[in-house]
Image (cartoon, rainbow, N blue to C red; front, side, top):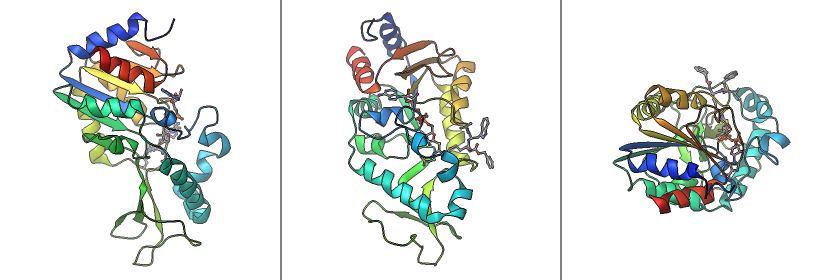
Length: 247
Ligand code: BV8
């Protein structure tokens, strides 16, 4: 049965209708329908590159040019992408509930482009670069083009993508804000994530301890599926606008 006709979407809408505080956690899947490759799915980024070879401080220390080459390639893919109906529906959700917070693992900036404002980019943003020296000056590189050399800060130190790599801590203040929002929410939407990267993958269990209803929106099962109260199996670009229509 198509998920749109299933009673699952009806139960999700009922839960949202009564919600005062809603939180959405998104992963690469919500940008898939915008043409941005995911990480672990078929055709995913990690299938062609090993995460450990590129998204770690050690990889950058070993070969900053290779890491920058990968990020510039990803930027070119993202520059061609536009927000899809899933991003746009979540941006409109901000006006539909007394409290709505968007937590994204994505670094592509498409939620902000879609109009989301109450958003926490937990893994950073691919369009920013930061100085590897001190102070950690941050630069917006949206209008930059790749040069022949690894970019440098005016201070002379190398610049790096302003994203969180494996083995690096997330911004503690952002994690605290995210955890507070999840603890206090009535409904947690977990959208387009394989739910395997921590500490974000630990947030749904925090929501359930706080009595929230957890709704998973994904084309495939994940380790979260068994824990979710409601599972909406299908593309977020179709499901989220349908949920919004029924609200
Ligand atoms: C930290 C870089 C501590 C930015 C990324 C062993 C056990 C548990 C944890 C660990 C462990 N060993 C190491 C760890 C910690 C590690 C971790 O969790 N590893 C995992 C892989 C085991 N975590 C960390 O290292 C984090 N830091 O723990 O620090 C610390 C504390 C103090 C001091 C020092 C250290 C840092 C994690 C962030 C890593 N950075 N990316 C970039 O270049 O992008 S991770 C990368 O994965 C992205 O950020 C991405 O957002 C994230 C999660 O992936 P997803 O978004 O879920 O994407 P994925 O492709 O996996 O899945 C897509 C999903 O969408 C699929 O389910 C698919 O079915 C679905 N889908 C597809 N199309 C659609 C769809 N759904 C709906 N609609 C569609 N159309």
